[in-house]
Image 1 (cartoon, rainbow, N blue to C red):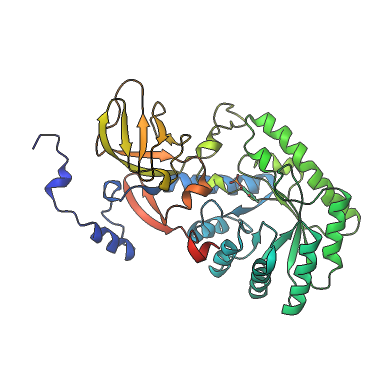
Image 2 (tube, rainbow, N blue to C red):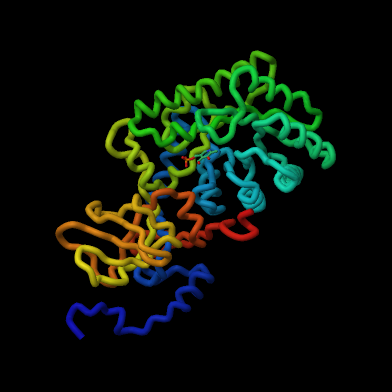
Length: 393
Ligand SMILES: Cc1ncc(COP(=O)(O)O)c(C=O)c1O
């Protein structure tokens, strides 16, 4: 064997022992090199920095946060967010809401209006079991159905109106139509008006902070104005919610009372490029805490290698190699990706490479756990929950 043969071949390694230790929650002596790839790594210090930064921002500027769990699907992280002052957790699906409520999380807001028998009844039953759970509605029909189901179940859910904020996906018209929707909730014997939501998904990734600020004002002001019209009409509007990781330091000045930001916990490459208030070329308010660890599996072609992270692992050409901006990612197939470079030292067979993923929601959904790291050392494992099959529906 040559002098640069890695020492790991000189001692037997049984991967089953690593799994057994993880199951016992004994993380001692487990290192990056021992982990199966592709897998998700969380840099503990960076994640904690992000959680603290959001918490301090909210305390300093007087806005609340009810963080969106769609990006992490982790009850461990949700609990950390609550411990740092989050009012609760936002959920994109009824299954996520059930997951968070069953983990004992209070103040869960389901940010998509329930539609159809299955979602309406699961929402009602969830609220009957946990009174702090809240829903939204962007249609009078949803309001009527929730009221009737609530009467049948003898419960009284809190419902917010979901208003259009520039993202043509959901959201009732702002202005007087919005006031009418709020009045409809208020008029129902079995519903309580919780306030107003307006998710400005078009503003969140607008490049350049001043552009983003202008777009946010344009898209969110009508939502806040509708909330004011509701108040003038005598309605109680305790919550005005929306916002995102991209607009967290803009939303308060527009009049939101709480943020639904999610991606700030980990960051992804689509967010990294939007630019911050102080640094136009890069959004550095948040640390890139999440990477996909992959292994170079073949080096037979010039200026490129194959890695064991492909379409099944959600590899995208917009993913970036940590610490090696000159290397580009390309999709190759289900279990293979390609990393390419033009000049200089590339990557070698067996080498570990970390990738920043393009979109957190899609990527975290592929993996069953976060390996939480301090440098090369494994220090914790958080399950990523409700990702496939019945638990995701
Ligand atoms: C309804 C809703 N609220 C808030 C967010 C916040 O997202 P982020 O901070 O990850 O951009 C999202 C993201 O898709 C969303 O769909």
